Length: 293
Image (cartoon, rainbow, N blue to C red; front, top):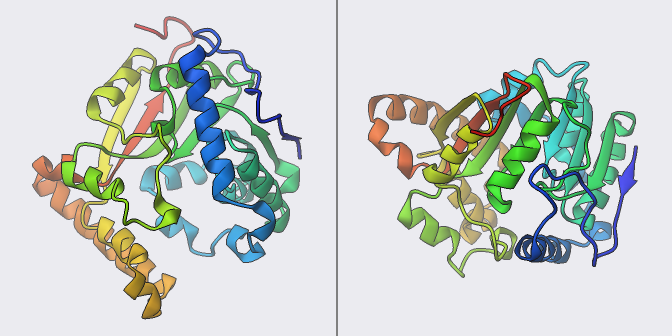
């Protein structure tokens, strides 16, 4: 398993289809790195927190589950891997997994998670920025990101995504949707727990930003999700729920039921879609030339 950790004052060397990062982007990268490095001390994270949960598939969006069923023998990128639990899960599904994160602390945890979950031989973790990837051209069959695209410059990231995807490759991102004004206020509310505070530069994706991806990919599909299901996240954050001993298994069962209710409701009331908590964005590369339109 490869691990690349770079000094705090440097930015990972990459290729950059649209050129090297400018001063503004470098500043953003450093702020993101500092924010996530300060959030966790890897040595203090317990082993149980890094194990792949036994029912993880039930918590994933259907688009991601469909890819996991095709991952055996594929080359997969976990884009902005965080603690690397999903990276380990993809490796358990039979993929060769390359994952990266802007934070050295997160990559240290990703490497540890790979060892704990028995997939160190199929997982390579690096410190890297999404706008400045060091991977070869047309390298990945699939790229998957969970709540990470809203941390990066979406145009630069899209150009790099297209470069590293194979023809016919797919990328799936599950991202916070920023069309619900009330929800955006709660996301920025200072009363939220420290574990759910936002970095200075992140912002939930708007439809206008998602449309920019059409410059780079022949297929861009959007599915809004987690309308009623967002109540589960609210319960997880309420102190009284933790004090009452509400179990994760109970929350998972409620989440599955609310997810089914969401599907029914959003089919019949599509005008509710912009109020959803998350959006699933599926990208497909079908050509090898003429990406940017």
